[in-house]
Image (tube, rainbow, N blue to C red; front, side, top):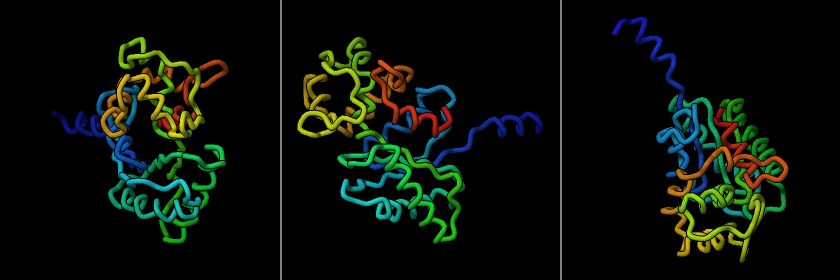
Length: 217
């Protein structure tokens, strides 16, 4: 291989984006976007798992939790960092909560002398499971789900018993839903064009679309 061709190939390699995620399901699921080419053009993704955030934690507390992980990515050369955490039961809407966490995180990073210009916060509304349910009809048609959904859009819903989609997924699967096993598996079987479409009358997820757009796809 010529030196010129080698340089061209290196220039075509997309830089890895550093991810910070809330739990095991996202840690396993999100890198598959690139590895399995689930969405065209998705760059490589390197996740760090927070192992939970806590619905009671305020934006400033979330920022203090996130800052060391952001710095860890930056130290490894991953200059673009995308944080994805859940809205949970919070009264703030997803964009408002994202803005509050972003402002607090930027202040925290600046206080530590670290850059914050390419650090992004996306909030799953209300949780990762809502993104799986954004293509519930399609998953039923493709026989991933045993039963058809009785709802239209699940975006922003707390769902039955306020479990943020777990009860609904259990009903659709016809067996108990396992967040760590079923979550990543169902994620790889989504029709992302459908799941991210949230215009009037669509059943998809605005927060999933925001996440994918933040990744650049």
